[in-house]
Image (cartoon, rainbow, N blue to C red; front, side, top):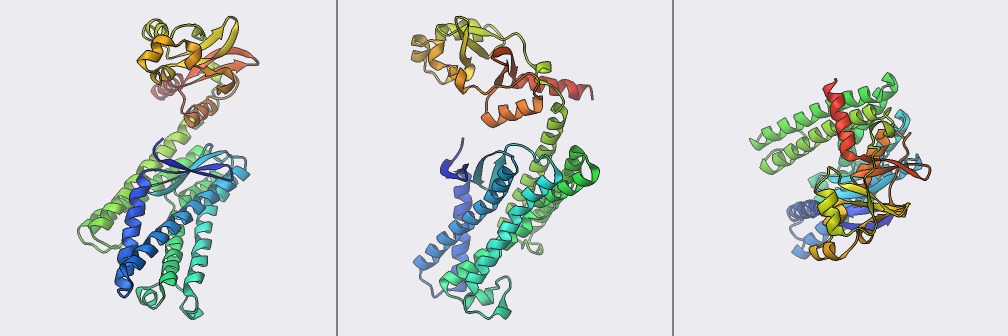
Length: 389
């Protein structure tokens, strides 16, 4: 996985993608430029220090926005694997779609509300002794009259409010698009249809952003977005990202709907390939992997199933290890395997495969292995359904 882990909060892994470092640097540079323009009397060290602190607090605010989504999702019984800060902000890795329109609405709306709350707190801190009649999104005139810390807080207040407003744009999969989907879902009683309509709206907004970005490249002033090459390229990037995300989320919903009523036993491979735990790794490669279509094998020690070995396990071994080790040394032990029952649906199986980044699931009925469900079995089923309309 790209990036690094920050730690855990409420049992949720917090991660930073390497691309986040780029946007952190850009935000810091932009803030420093703003402080230098508004307060030329400040020293360069003061400008850069406040810019770095302001950028850090901004991304902590983004993290709080995502944590709000994740904590509410977990409270409603939906698992959350991690939160990642990356180039376009933050994303919560919520592992299942909400099961009802009200869950979708509550999980979606809490993020922007958190941003609005933080925005109000930062504005209040920034205003300090400024008269209440001046409370508004900060203007350059107001900011130039404030001290260093107050200026930074006023900027943080405004950017959090703008973040909340941006996320309420009804462009799926933004929070506003998910709010729209929850409403359409409640009205139509059809999650897939609601997702399709929300995705179409999201793609439309994405293309508007891309078009606006192109106009900005040629110097056209777009309200709230500005103009110029840098701003234009950034808006085009955001539009492109939203367009792809809208399409992918609809496709995901469609796949989940197709697989939702398909039991695992219908598409699993009942002929489970088996190897001995004492087989040499080299022999596994030469005899079983190279000469068959199988890439994963259940490992048995006599009559007892003790684990699973796959081509990925082999790839982690050096040439010397392959010559000297046996399957038992590189396999995944039984107690660590992710399994599924034959009567569970294929949508749940696909979730487990994707969330654990694995290629196959042993199908277990009680204590007995009855099959192996591979990612390619699901893909083949989806291909057949696509060909049959």
